[in-house]
Image (cartoon, rainbow, N blue to C red):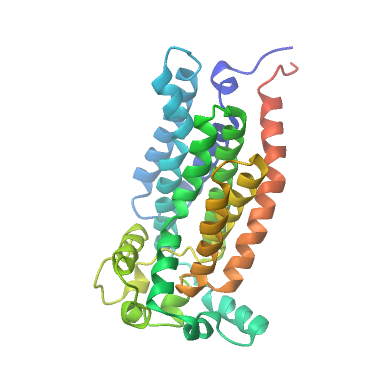
Length: 311
């Protein structure tokens, strides 16, 4: 009998998951290097990121290195955004065909209309303001869940939560590559008229600009669809919000009722605010179920790999 190498044994499930994803994305980029913009820099960044994760995991084993343990616990948060922008570069570089026409057709087949257009009859500045704030609360919902578990020192539950959230994001990113789409604000509506067609009260316009900047859409650009992130299907907002609601209920955290309320408003906002087709939400729900069902098996498998292994 022999043990796995030390650097492998210290990796938490979320570490292994992130490193494997970075490796495969790096390998894919190398294969497609002629088509991916700045491919070498991305590959180097992925390799550096994987190395840092290993070093953090090793450093976090020392009980005297509290700061490293905290960083190791929370590094998936910025990593998720980094990978999100990497996916953006890949899709933009490959100029993949958008699937919006199919998603629109699915919505029309189910509802016999375009839900974002139908919802216009219920629009008002007050409703728009509330739902825009709810939409922006996306990352805050996940941080609230994770932070409460962490502060309660329920580290096993926290570790499972951070794994599931990271896993869910990475699965949605794969969906974006296979089914790139920009959403109804570009296809069924005039993106540049959104502030006048669907006005808010105080914060709506600023919050929209904030979201657009995160999706690499410059302000006052003539052709915003050319810059937009292809992240409509599946609806990551729906997938991850449902995961948060599920885990908040499972662990009975004290802030769960706020997460239920804001989570429900957020999911409604994805269609009302024209970010998603309803078909995207269905896809997000299916991705959520797959994430929750398969995550425990992946964690169990990885823990077995870091135990004593036969020669």
